[in-house]
Amino acid sequence: MSEHPIQSTVEAGGPAHAHASPAQAYESAKLGVWTFLATEVLLFGGLFTAFIVFRLKYPQLFREDYVHLNRILGAINTIVLICSSLTVALGIAAIRKGKQGLLKLFLSLTILLAAAFLVVKYFEWTEKFAHGLFPGTDVFFSLYFMMTGVHGLHVLAGIAVLGAMLVLAGRGRFSEHYYTPVEVSGLYWHFVDLVWIYLFPLFYLIG
Amino acid sequence: MANGHGTGYRIYVAVWGGLIVLTGATVGVSYIDLGILNVVVALLIASAKASLVALFFMHLRSEHRLVWTFALVPIFFLVLIIGGTLSDTLFR
Image 1 (cartoon, rainbow over the protein chains, first blue to last red):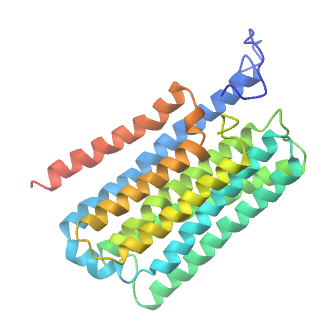
Image 2 (image 1 turned 120 degrees about the horizontal axis):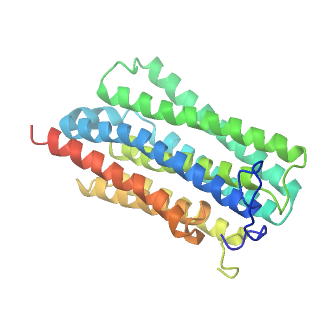
Image 3 (image 1 turned 180 degrees about the vertical axis):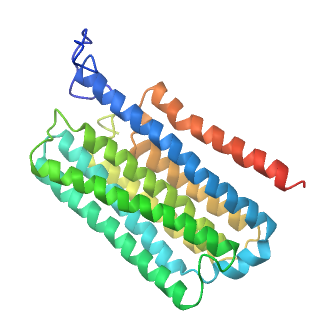
C-alpha cells in the first residue's frame, strides 16, 4: 500500500515496540485480519460443503423447500448489505482524507443498515416458525437456519466492531495519519457481505 | 482510476452500482427456468460480485503479493475440501 501516508523508514525498534514503524504496524494489522478471514472462509466453507453434498443427494427435497423462502426479502437484504459495504468503504475513504465527521456519519449509516438486515432476518425466521418450519424440519431447513444463523452472528459481531469504531471516532482517535482499526474493521465487514453474496443465490434463487 | 489507488468516492459508488445491477440480474434470471444453467449463472454472478467486493472494497487490487497469497490460499483449501468430499459422497 504505497499510498499510505505513514511512510517512515524501517528502523530498529526498541524492545518495547512490536513493530519497527507505523507503516509496518499498518501492514501487519491488515495481514492479521486477512489471516483471520482465511479461517472464516474455511468455517463457512465447511457449511457450504455440507450444502453441496445434501443438495446433490436430495435435489427433490431442496426444490420443494426453497420455494418457502421469500426471494424478495432475500434480495432486499442483499441490497442492504451491499449498501452497507459502500458506506463503510466511503467512511474509510473519508478518514484517509482526514474527514472525521464524514467517517462518523458513514459508520452510523453502516450500523443502521446492518441492524436493518437483522430486522428483515428476524421477520423471515419468525414467519418460517409460524409455518411450522424449524431447524429440525429437514436437512434443507437445518442448513438454512444454521448458515443464515452463523452469518447473522457475524452481522451482530460486525455491529459491535463498527460500534466500537464509532465510539473511537467520536473520541477523535482517527485521522488521515492513523485509521488502521477502521480499515481492518472494514475488511471484516466486506467479508460478511461476501458470504451473503453466496448464501443468497444458493438458498433463495436455486435451492 | 484517476488516482490509481481506488480511494476516491466515485469508484466505490461505481462498484456499488455494478453490484446492484448484478443483484437485479441474478434475481431476474432466477424467474426463468434454464435447468442446470440456473445454478451456473447464479454462481457466476455471485463470483463476479465477490470479485468486485474483494478487488475494490477490500482494496485487493492495490495490495502486494503477500496479501494476495493470504486471500487465495484459503480458496485453494476450500476447493480441496469440496472436491475431496464430493469424490467420496458422489461415488459411494
